[in-house]
Length: 112
Length: 113
Image (cartoon, rainbow over all chains, first blue to last red; front, side, top):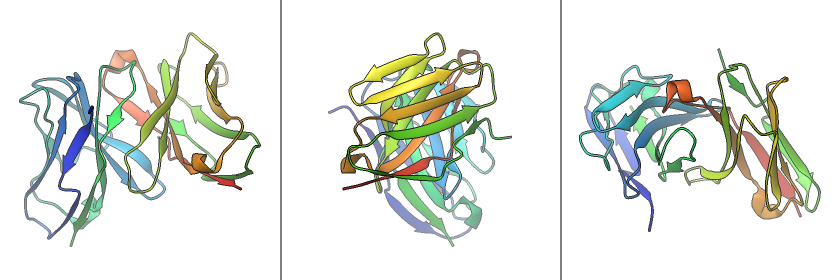
């Protein structure tokens, strides 16, 4: 089954404790992205990647890091999480800019 | 600045009637537009898209219209069904910035039986 998986689905952590949210896709997609969804603000792109070792900043990259060492994986790293990073996070993948994105089920992160 | 705007946070329609969801954009470089639907506790799923070289695209009950001069697109759902109740996001891409995707804030559609 074609899918995007994210782990964990739910995470409660404390300020400053480094964490990684994993994302994996099995569709051999070139493009992958991370978004956060906050009430009234829609989906905002954090980082995106066009291929292995090619990443770029989205609209809200501050406080986040990503890496794309393999085509199927695109982890999101929060080196020192803060309460304003409490949000619902989605990973997505696609063939390209002129193709639809496939989204993961989301990761709800709470930073205390 | 918000480059993609959905000015109606919510919309309520009766089952069987038409639902019209609107989206405005400001960046004239956008050349591909998509609509996604999102149910609670799930990720968004793709609904329909349109290229800037077209002004209409149809897929079953869903039609997207694009007015480039007004920088406006709309999603029509006919007839609306209770299962269409969800949050709808419009998104815009442009090939000169491959990988970048800009979403609106979403419109919550409620279809009443």
